[in-house]
Picture 1 (cartoon, rainbow, N blue to C red):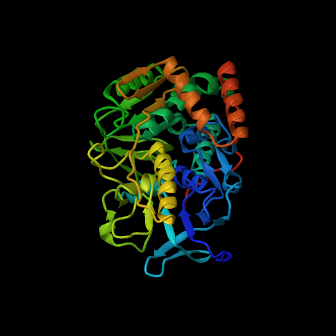
Picture 2: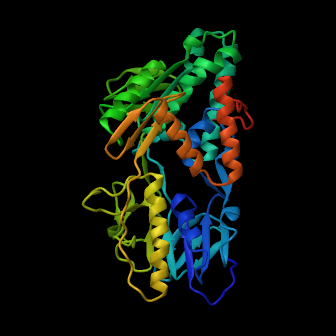
Picture 3: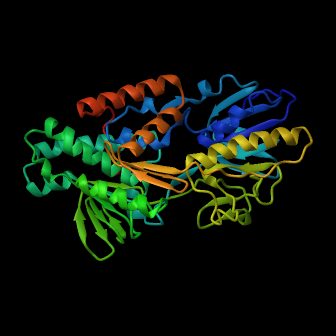
Length: 425
């Protein structure tokens, strides 16, 4: 890999998600060479991916160039590459564009979709972990409605208009609510010759309630909101198989659908080259100490979703959401500075800012420490928090005006098939 030798310590950061970006930004004034590696040249604001997939926003509203985010860093370099493995003995990162040595390595690769070993579902389901996948869902949805408008068979039409979302966590709930808003406010105007009542939205969850990571109260309110929107909720329901048209449940029930979206779980996007003892196999997360050092390695760290730091308050590690990643990235930057100054590192302590999920227009749920509430106020707080968290002034402005337009006109303007989706053959 073509990088200059500046005679400075080199900190290599793999991954430009919430953790990697927050770390790199805090290294701005440090007398080191910072190299960020990512397979995309942009940072994605993942909490709003569902709005891209349901035509609420264009992808450039929630993505921002990595080079622009970090342009003020001293001695900063970005490389668009896929990391193949880490050679810990040689202190070298092996990528598809060459190798790179490091003094300190930070792994912030996040997670990928977990299909739990079900190859049929993995082959046919629609995941939603990145911008291209969100665009695939948008294109498939609109393409299927165009086909339904021209379909002769009633059975085929219903299959094309049947939406099945597997996973009742925040992503699944938000997707279900967004599809319901399309059914209520948008599609009746676009497809006037279709019976929109044939559009069904099904949400499947293996647990006994939706939003398992949040409070029981939040789950109950979200269920109430989804029922009001006409979403069919299936609790204690396991999805066993999907072949592209037929979805099979644990009890043998078969549901026909051409819109099958999988949000049922994630697994760590770990890298090759590490000892098996450093990895929690079930979750595919690196075991890290209170300084975010990977177990068994002094100069290699992991932050965010890929890191599992077990504490008294978090015996299974911190939740795999944005806030732990951001806080760990900021804290690690301070510890790296302390290391370079010959000082002892300080342990990480997580401050829980709460959690929230939106369930359509004027509907959301918020867990804020011991405070639990839902409805319009929660929805307004959800919008404000997500708007402020977006990277870049331009993105904030565009998203704000899109939301204002959608709210006033009961419309979603990004109903474009700019890149038709074609299923794998």
